[in-house]
Image (cartoon, rainbow, N blue to C red; front, side, top):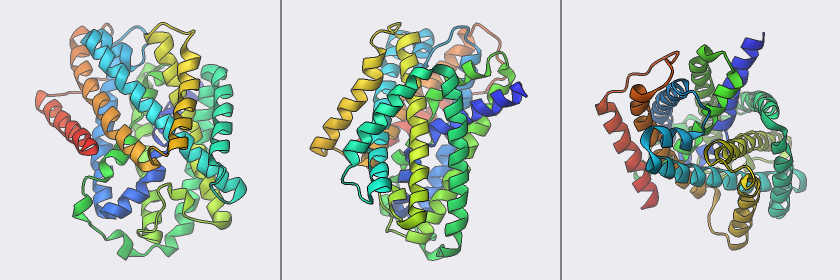
Length: 374
């Protein structure tokens, strides 16, 4: 029973990290580019990133010491590799935490007041609760990840069957080639979850053989849920989807969808904060300053963005996904190559990675970065 619980807990930790604010932005970019184009990017990038996650899992199994991603980059690629990974991690996590604070503030304000006028107040309140929960350690991570994902799965499934009868096929049989690359950044962001995989090793303990299956299950669940979520939202609303999709409906059903957004962002916010804290503890060896950078800096960024209206929800997701996600994915591929030669332990599984595959994927990720910037 403990082994099965560890397996599900690890898989759901990954699922909970992947299903964050990204799911709320998917219907908007799917509607803009056309559902068919959005579906293409979801399946293509979904399968690609599962492959990259399995490579990262092998890296972890080949290494004795516990690290977060910058630590593995530093070990196998040298100081510059570690520094680049650290910058990508920090940029990505802060962007994600910022998006979650914006999304939670608007969702909680809509839920309790019927409008988004008090978003800033609710966003700060949410930050305070998450900061308190972060003190709970690894056991609290397991519980929040496990039960948070179960709630998310239930709500998405309910929403799917409630909305399905109202889906109009003309809304999903759409292609707008002008916006072909538009979904790339948001879809990439919604599928990441790299930072959770080192935490999976800590959760599974000595049951190292279950890591591969935990990664596969944890990464496949979001793909299925994303497809269900985007299909019914675009199918019912067409192009009238809000940037934060769960703000598109009112009434009791609207409140149910708001709860979905709240639970997904809460789960992911906590897991990413935990991963960022581990970066400072295990990789930078500085526990004293971790509270300031993990808790205070996201709050300051949120206040800055809110007061000066510097960026919107979807824009933050796109930049974070393409830039941070692309850089991390490229580095993981090269770390994997190096770990096969320098690894300290024989892994429980091995992924074959020819050079032409590395080259193709690197070009893909670089193209996504350049598109999102320019």
